[in-house]
Length: 100
Image (cartoon, rainbow, N blue to C red):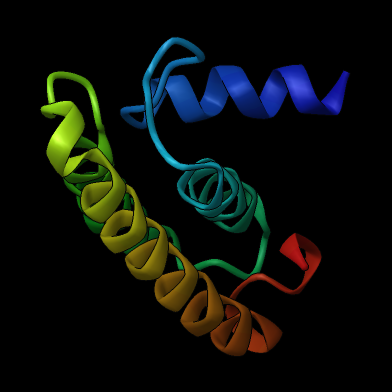
């Protein structure tokens, strides 16, 4: 299914099904993967986008965060993913219209 293909693609880009990240970050990663697969997405930007996504997902992982800090970490990660998803959505009209 398309969802499984996206999950496996997102894994390649730094996010596996087992990673503990806020749901909004998983949605963002899946949209970035969809965007990069769009024929309108500039091929020369894929490497930089892949690197940026891997780095971002590494920062969003909640694994190992103390319980006392988890709520703040989750909120901060969710806020960042929501903000970047909004920016991606705004840019998608030209770079990856099929992603949204």
